[in-house]
Image (cartoon, rainbow, N blue to C red; front, side, top):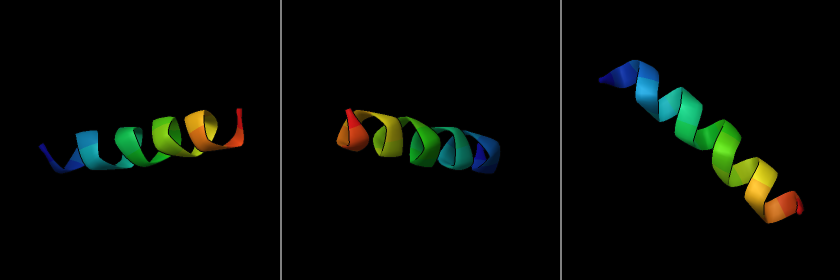
Length: 18
């Protein structure tokens, strides 16, 4: 489930940059 952490990081970045 470590791969999910990288995906979440990208998602959070996209959400924060929105």
